[in-house]
Image 1 (cartoon, rainbow, N blue to C red):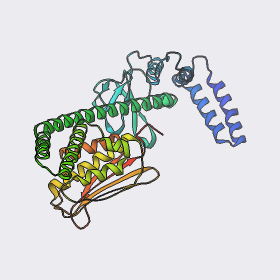
Image 2 (tube, rainbow, N blue to C red):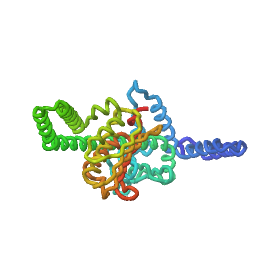
Image 3 (cartoon, rainbow, N blue to C red):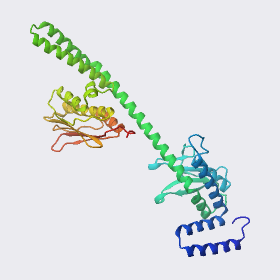
Length: 378
């Protein structure tokens, strides 16, 4: 009870407030009147309401041009300390998906069940899930009802603090995942460059040299021209291989689009591939990811599937690009393998989804769905 409030006066005011609420029959007015009476009867709750209203005005007044007066978590913790007269009280916030707890400075903290000293007050959110708790000295004199009233007045501040902690945690997780993906992509590019330098590049250069020698050895002009064209094609293939190993899109893809690049890729494979690619253009980054998905899936099918039939299809809907590479081979493709894991990371970073499974009738089906624009672009 407030120091200067008389019990008779409070009962008198409460009587007329109750009569007014019943006469009006309005739910919101009744609730406001009840809260007003509860605050009159509980000095701690009244102080919590006053400080919360002040802090919310401060938060609303903060602009990008002025430094913030404090985060919602800091302000809620200050209010708890002031209300209970405990300068060492702390507020702890729950992270989503049971990822743990943090303090008002976003530092990891123990959960309420791990606390051994002090008095824990739980703060329940929607559905009764505990979203925060605060720890105070056990001898502050506030019973369960008094603490519940304070929590009720602080709820808006605490929910804002939990929301901010959740957003920050998710942002950090995205950054960590992107860094991990970039490290994996870099390691894969280094491996590809090493394998290209040590193996394929050397054999292709030797083949180009043999063709050059053959060109000078033949007398027939038509054969010489054919060999010259073959040498030029080999040089283009070498350039494309170097670009792919370095993570760059082939020049044909950049100039003419996905359909032309996939048809060209399929024509150079040692096994026939049925190609059906929609002649559409989308964001260069998305086209590059789509090409690498198709190229990796076709390479795996040719090298490992022992297939009689291989198909590559790309269709477009108003919002997405749909890719499918299937074969009738022995199946058993491992999604955790180096190549598929690399394109899975590329697809995820582009905002898409990749699935690797069994083809109906036997074999493997690699499917991907990509947005027409990278994440963050309209």
